[in-house]
Length: 331
Image 1 (cartoon, one colour):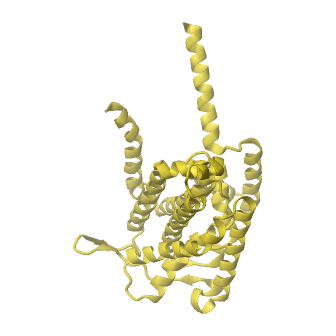
Image 2: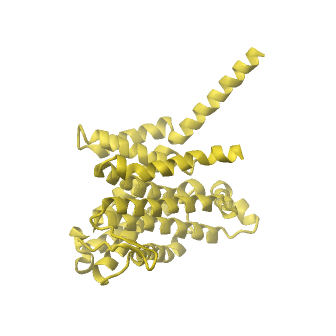
Image 3: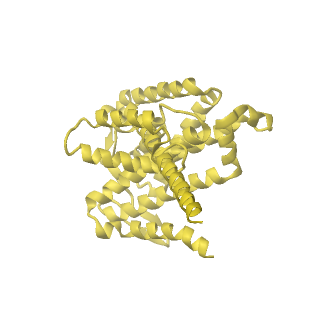
């Protein structure tokens, strides 16, 4: 009982701390945290492919963009559309795109998988740019209505013009997404993911269809990237090709994952926090953020390939070795 309390106590403290963020901090840090949470979910969704299944995508932004554009288009062109259906349309857009691309990409791996995604993402980027009459072209879509959160007969509160309300809505949706992805990795199917990453032939010999398993993980990853994109579109109240489908958007979750560590589920979350902190500091001195982040990324690949979580694990191992050594000496 005590062990269970110790395990859940940090999570309870985190939930309480998140609940008091709007009361303690100003709107700037509240918005900063929403942005962090969006890209944390986006990065973890990529890590379902990269860290757990061994599939590197250079075009994961197309699902982030599909979620954002799906929700924005729905809110722009469907009159009085409620909030949850608008969110669902964004997620459905990402899932439908994944279902179209999936049969082509799950049969390949390695460099071919990564480059095919870059090609598809750039194709979608060009389509968004050229379809000005629908997507607004390079100007994007903006100033669409953000409907209130409403469950008929239960609760209703506005999100537009109410930053604290939107904060709670975003954190609940994104937190639930993180929990669902974590739960997915702990299921027996999550073990198949890891098996595909480590030895796909052995998984095939055990009787599992590797391509079918990849397809399930792929669609799950796309769906949660769509959740992040949809929430981000409502938060920013604008979607544009460069901010949702650009090449840099595809590389951001890769950098976050490598900074935090692909060997851990929460590695991309740590990586997103580190990236956001570095970006915030660099902006105070220079606008060459990409250059500095690129240099840091190269140094991480060279000297800390397991990222922050791997470094913490190594330090914990060394501390336990030191502690055991002292105990033996004392004995």
